[in-house]
Length: 418
Image (tube, rainbow, N blue to C red; front, side, top):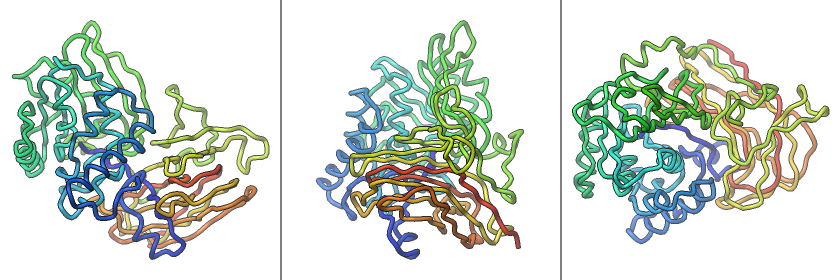
């Protein structure tokens, strides 16, 4: 699975070097051992991850939750990444792809209402983790990976671990797997600009597809049901997924502009989308859009409140940026906060931009904060060098496991080119 959404870690420290070292790849770091190497340690870390990053985030299906508790995620990542396997984070798996965060895997699985008699098609095998989670929940899983090395590697891992009802194929997932159609459910774990017609054709009447659709950095997760041969869709939540490799991505009508990155809806004046989420942002947790004539910009701003230490409260936005063209970024926010306190793993409230290279590995960071204690509205800004290797970035605002209340408004970014 290929969602590469990444967030600020709990370990926000007070020096740039420590901050950069602490910035792992994920959206929410649970209180997992730093080097969980034994089976018992992996098991304990996995149970805590499920409790704090999946159940606490709203996943309710008991069978899905149990599958997440039972699936050894550490087996689907590189050995060098195993100590991070049970953080709620994306991790690189090679070929510019990532294993999805556990929350996204659980959420998408719950969306398709998996039944023991279902035949499920997954587009974008990646590491094989999503297929492994599906395996005990459905009758058969057919999964397709376009990158040959990833597909073959996932097949070996799934076979070694005994997932006998998972069938892996290397090929173009957008063409589906017609000889095994029709499918009861389809999960698409890479982002097309629109639903490929072969997948619609291969879905049974009444069947469900869950898929992230949209522009490269502005996607929405949709749940679609086939009714009378046509797809009826429900927008679930904004998201950020890796696009399909190759021609499908190259043919997008709207291409990213990495030489001119910008913040979308940084003043939060746009109304909530029809799905009830902020426009332009994704993975919001414990967030409210508020209206107040005293806000620094316009009338609206966002507030995050959390009283459960370690629980995620944040919002993110991805954008392209080319470090070969842009030398510096100037980053500013207006912020106010009340009774904010450090959480587990030294979690602190902050705003940050993290840069990633073409392999989606973290190469740099610009951080504002930490914001601890109490403060009325004030503007905070900082300039930072853009790494030459940078090709993408994620902007994030939040408490990140700390407690208290924090509000943000007028989030701005400008760049300086070489």
